[in-house]
Amino acid sequence: MSVLVPSTAAMHLVALAVPALVPQDINITPNSNGLPGIEQLRTIVGAVMTVGLILSVLALIAAAIVWGFGANSSNPHLASRGKLGVLVSCGAAIICGASVTLVNFFWSVGQSV
Image (cartoon, rainbow, N blue to C red; front, top):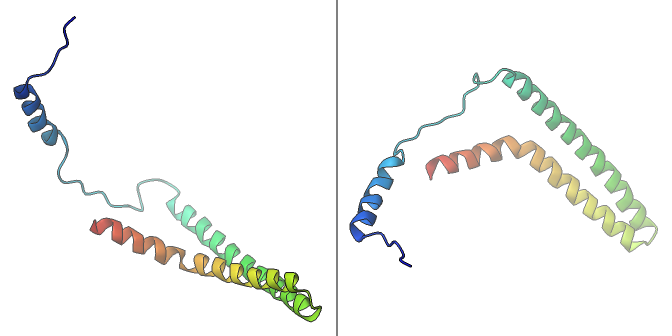
C-alpha cells in the first residue's frame, strides 16, 4: 500500500498560488439605500430606544420606592434589592442612551484594524 506524499515543489506552488486567490483590497461601507425599509427600521429602533428609556425611569422609581420601604422598615434585604434595582435601572438607561455612540465607536475601531 503506497501513500501519496506531495512533493516539496508542488507544495511550494500551492503556497504561492493561495495568496493570489485572496483579494487584497476590500472596501465595503454601509449604505442607507441598499434595501427598502431602512428609514422605517431607523424609526422603529428610535421608538424602541424611547420605550427602553421610559421603562428605565419606571424601574428607577419602583426600585427607589422599594429601597425606601426597606430602609424605613428595617429590612436590609429589601433595602439592598432596592439599591440593586436603582443601579440596574441607571445602567439600562446609560446603555439605551449611549447605544448609538457605542456602536459608532466600535465601528470606527473595527475600521482602523
